[in-house]
Length: 241
Ligand SMILES: [Zn+2]
Image 1 (cartoon, rainbow, N blue to C red):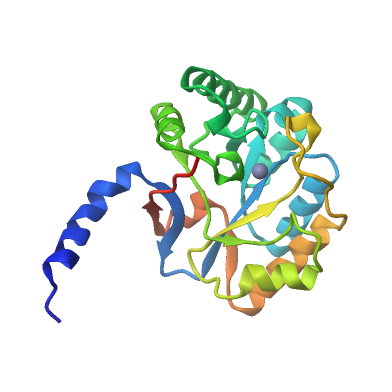
Image 2 (tube, protein in one colour):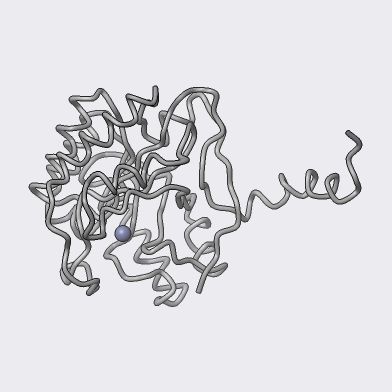
């Protein structure tokens, strides 16, 4: 098939546009799902998720709230010791877009430092709370050497629905290289936000059910770092107010 000029233009614009992008999925030939957990660490639920991952031989990337890492440094160190990847969600859960550039720069640098102090890890990825970022916040965090990572699949684990519905949401149309948004905790007043009542359910049991559902489909869950050993990050512009 002959390519028309527009196709040619888009093909050449891709690599040029990529530096302005955020990672949303991984291009891979391996049957791997990128599993990400946000809003922790939280004593109780994070351990339950870690136990489920260990049982399944899976790895994940945890986008942590640095304020919570300060309160539970041993739990942050445990997830790294168990082979998972640690990344930054924020100092707390307030949207990046609510801060001026200099304040966001300081808060992000502080978050990176807190994680390094607790775990010895150098953070590579950052996920803006609520997925909210604009060109200014994107520029601020990328200048600190961080790459924004968003998602292209979700688990519905912040909603009050049955586990079966959550697993269906996370598996329908989800395949190799998808980046799944999940939560090992729930941001609350201690994180500077009020997002209502947390749905009550066993996050360890949900993680086990999810991993079993993926295994039935021949899919393995891995951290972003592990997925990128055999794949390529796919970026796209992701900006909202
Ligand atoms: Zn969050």
